[in-house]
Image: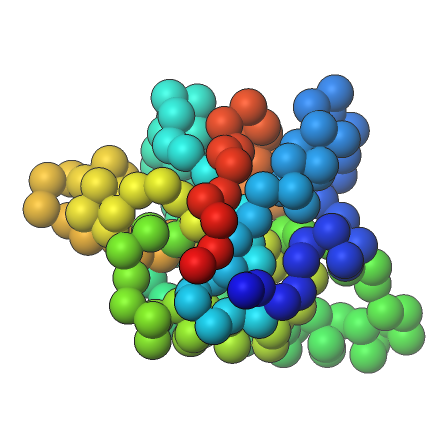
Length: 181
């Protein structure tokens, strides 16, 4: 059984999403339709189906250079951003409010070790990073975004506009998670 449910936390979505008419419904769907990241996970994540709108939003983000591929690349980027945020907060003397600004999309066929590493990264980078488990395997996600024969277990959207567009593309297609077992 999962542990931390998104409903137990104050999930703050990007302003673009909050101001959209679909924002409240998306927030409800994201927090209500979750499953554990892996069998013994302490973290529940939303589950989403791939749809045409989501595919288009991801391809647009890729063309714009706003998509990072792979766990290690995402971790390096988040660590670098975290250092920059801490420096900016120190210089300004003000701690910024925290809302989702990065989105991890995960293939559903990774090994337990992969998902454990994702969970560590999510705990480290806190509420500014949201992970969503796609109902798609790494081969399908890789081929969709990077061409035939490509594999992608994780892609991260690193721009607020892209994060908002992808979240809104999911608004109607977040699915009921199967019971954990």
